[in-house]
Image 1 (spheres, rainbow, N blue to C red):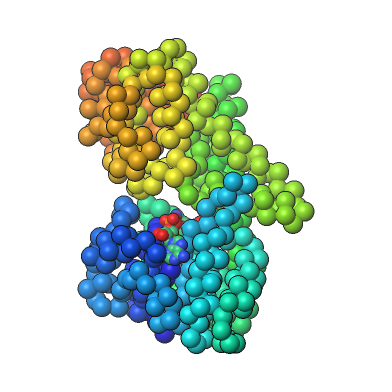
Image 2 (spheres, rainbow, N blue to C red; image 1 turned 90 degrees about the vertical axis):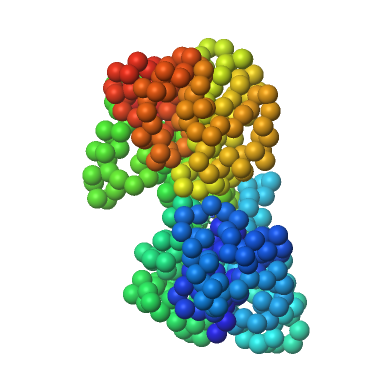
Length: 433
Ligand SMILES: NC(=O)c1ccc[n+]([C@@H]2O[C@H](COP(=O)([O-])OP(=O)(O)OC[C@H]3O[C@@H](n4cnc5c(N)ncnc54)[C@H](O)[C@@H]3O)[C@@H](O)[C@H]2O)c1
């Protein structure tokens, strides 16, 4: 059975290439023709480790192709993975217009039984709406099934995450759809959890919100640490050694960003509101997270007093390492505020500078540097905003030589405070004296 993947963004592109790698025949499609042209030539429009190679290999193998003719891709396929965006609308709900658009396209091109698989992150009960839309717009009564197979890949390790998943959630309401999806993931039969569609939809929102909550929780603890003699790294270690808690996602810092956690936490809060369930816990999660860039900027102001005219190096712009994605990155708020205060900014990121230039074009106030050392030249302070691995091995003594004032404000706790201070830096981090 041919598989169509609609939407070739971060998730769809990896899904298309990954399903082809599993041996399936896959057509990726997107309404963005420029994107499809690029991808068809074997070039990924996003930076994602290992993706270019996976793409090239499977394009050459002949079982992966791309087209901007969405209708034709739907007609050709028996299984359709829907990977379009579900961004936040102005009220905090998930904007489902891209999903509705795809459902209408599927209805128009329903030339035989198809399974429509929700891979995008969608609110619980979305499958009911997809069924309704397809039912309203299809000609005749060609049968179809809707299923939910939420995606858990992480940007930065999306390819290995997809190719070696720790679990596969398959939400179905018919044996026919279940059998097709289980066959697609045959290789991982023992990792497939079959659930109802509602449960599958909720699992995704509940998982992301829980991880976000864990991050906000440790950031709240970091605030307590800053008012005491406790070091949040020690507290997190002590907590994480409890296997019921675990060590992951207990990293105090600038909070979470990206295209998923912020919008998913808000979407689940709104789902709760719509269903009459108080998800105040999630509102607080969002509130703690939103406060992070402001608290970080307070430290910068504490160190520099007046920001106007100060030369500030900013290391890291992506919302997390190993991606070029800056959606909801804390760097955006930090750069905007510093620029507003009149600072002269010297930005560096290994991969995300191109995307950042679309938000902050190079100007007298904002310049982009080729490496951290160029950014640090004559700087009055250096800020660490994203924890790229390469920053760990920076030659701090050289940085100190280059900077006008040896001040580091580290939003990701990348350095050992004692070691940095020994080198003569004034050092501010998160949840540590
Ligand atoms: N990015 C992640 O790390 C991640 C991880 C898991 C789940 N998700 C979820 O997956 C979904 C997609 O996320 P993304 O980051 O890949 O989004 P994205 O914005 O990068 O990509 C969406 C793509 O869909 C295309 N599209 C929109 N409407 C279309 C239509 N009618 N026909 C054809 N193409 C259309 C767009 O042109 C775009 O290329 C979202 O629901 C997101 O929450 C994302």
